[in-house]
Length: 455
Ligand code: TRP
Image (spheres, rainbow, N blue to C red):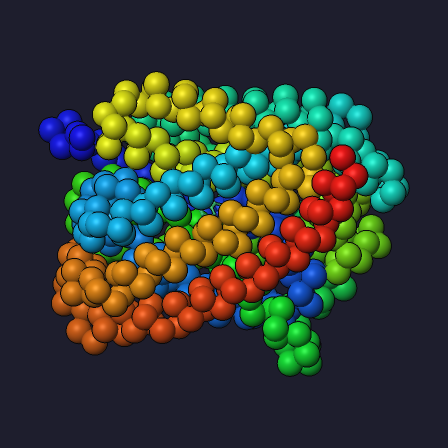
């Protein structure tokens, strides 16, 4: 039964909503994934394609999630039931499942960031890359990993249990400004390093030849990253927009959120690359644990690296936290709206289930990959694709109407938006899905089969 008679909470302020959406978007995707994708996919050339995808694919797709959330004022399952009904409600189910799986291992990785913050403060980082790798393997799986996964999950539970205004909104009002101030401060610090100028030219001057030679891997990677970093494809933005009480300009809000997310990812590159170049680490060679190996080793090499590293990993932990609460809120809002469960009970129960589901990822890195690839390259893309098809092809009038609330007549921008979703967004997602399935098959028959054989 839908709890229609219970008044639904709303954000207290416009800033609260924007900060929550920024907090969701800015996370491990910006700090952990982005710089190393730039490194792997050929530097500045990748950066350009990525920015293009953010504007052409990410922005229209984010507005789709916003209008669905604000129009229905419901969790993703309830929202799809309300606007489409029938089999489309299953898409909402895909969202819930995706959130569940992503958060289970996201919490394990976030646990590592807490562990690495403490590591810097307690012992400092190992400068030798080989030793750093050994240390990562030791800390990333097993009891350490399980303990910090549990700790992180507990904090997420508490924040979400307090609800929208007193939980999420309050938390992001502290966390998001802190993330911004610290990343800018660290970029200024990185500017003073010896390797800075070499790093900037690597990061900022594209070699056009790279795009021509490697577009097959650059394009899907950039598209996938654009979706992941903006928290699209599993109803986070539907859920957050469903708590908007009043009409306002969603296009403007979306642009602000995207601007902050892109700025933080970009600035992270200005931190990470000077540090790597100064320590003489090749950015194209991230290794298994990315920031936990090559970057940690670089901190081991720097003067005062222990404290700078601890600040860095601490900031990553905060960024991960403000993203994790959005993933949890998708699942919790479903249980609260559709099943009339008390929010605190829901947060606690779901948190325990997530802790258990994360145990395999904390037990072995191959199992973490098994969850990550499945959720990120298949579930996320599939759910996002179905939602984009539904809204742009069969609900376009409703969508344009809803977007114009708070803006006024959209004129030809309305159809331009719908067509941007109908063709470019849908095509990019279909290609990403096919490539993702192929990649997953390769993983299952390769590394995973090997791992199973070794057990
Ligand atoms: N955007 C976050 C990041 O960059 C991760 C994230 C949070 C996410 N919620 C999401 C990704 C929903 C996909 C879907 O780390």
